[in-house]
Length: 159
Image (cartoon, rainbow, N blue to C red; front, side, top):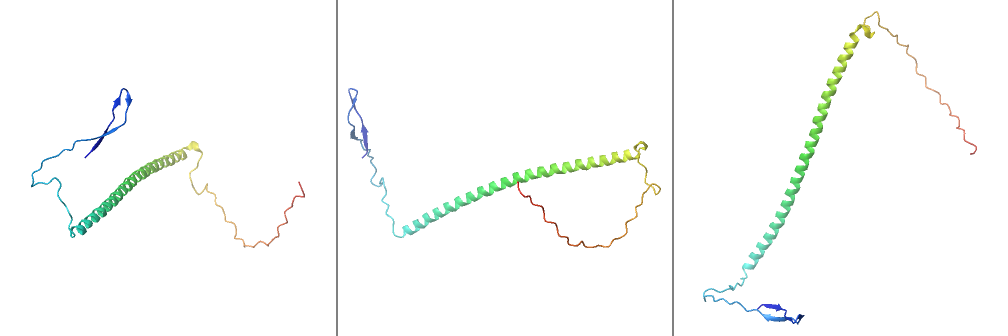
């Protein structure tokens, strides 16, 4: 049986709600077919059913852990690839700067060499005649310094 509530109004005023019984639908089944089969578990079926339920729960937990592990590995892989790409771009930029600095250094050396070869630069080519030779000073013996007491620092008498 199912119950439904109805409210009625009486001249604009609400009255109490009344319970009415909904009609029950009946079907005529053949006698060989019953609407609800009579299922009573046998004593041997319960442990097997319980083991299936335990297996289902454990495989669900394992599946959840595997999905979580897969997502974490995927996230780590994507992050490391982005990090590697960023660092590789930095490396390429540094290598390009190194090549540019090497080229600029060689251009500077070449311009200094060209400037030195010009007669108006005032530089002379190296020769024995215009070289200066410095004679090394004689070797001196090491004498350790005597321990000298440092004078006591002057302290102010007052402010």
